[in-house]
Each structure stands twice: as structure tokens, then as C-alpha cells.
Picture 1 (cartoon, rainbow, N blue to C red):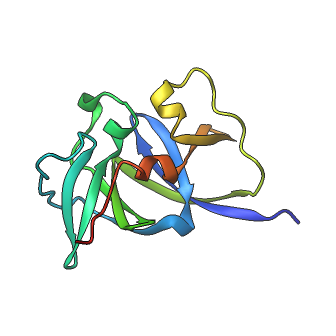
Picture 2 (picture 1 turned 90 degrees about the horizontal axis):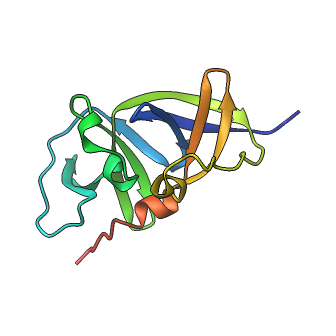
Length: 147
């Protein structure tokens, strides 16, 4: 019997992404975002998560995608980051997929360089490719200062 792992999936820019389900704290509907002056361009602002202030990262910008493709208010995929929770703004939340726990295939050279550095590999699916998001480089843009 082969071991399996669970991936939380989401859509962004017409691409299907997956991230390890154990890194996901929760999934939320669109929430008001308070802009943060002098923040990097890919930090959209802050959200209030039941009294906890959480940075919201514009994942589209972080991955180097065009901003005009976004449809409607983004959903919040809240990850457990090394310095606390961080919300990734995504277009649509998908299902949790269970896939075989085997090394992913290499990232195709056809992906944009900014996107390639954030993707750990790909998993072929019957309907296309699932890009495995590497949370390390994605969350490196967010520095949460507790003071």
C-alpha cells in the first residue's frame, strides 16, 4: 500500500495549485482588507481574524501574475506561517485531494521564472497539472513583527 498525502487546492490565474493540507489553518470567504502603508507590493494589507490581525498576501502579485485577471473578491487561504498565520488571497478554493506520496515531477521550463521559484513541482492529474506551491518562498515576503 502506497502512502498518501492531502493537498488543499485552489485556482489562481487559470492554474490549479495545491499546498499541503497540514499547512492550512482555515479557508475563509472574502474579508475586508485594511491597506498597510509602506508594505511591499505583494502584501495586500491586514485582515481581522476573530480579533487576531493577520497579514494578507496578494498571491497573484507574489507569483508575478497580471493583476487584471482577478474575478470578484478573493478568498482567504490562511496558512500556518513560521511567524504566525498568513492569508493567501486566491480566486477560488478547490477540494482536498489525496495523492500518492511520491516525489513530484520537475517544474516545466515553460512557467514564468517568478512562478517557478515558488512551485516545488507538479503532479499530473487527469484534467491537467497540479502545481505544488512551496510555502517557504511564498511566505518569505511577509515579516510579522510582534512588537
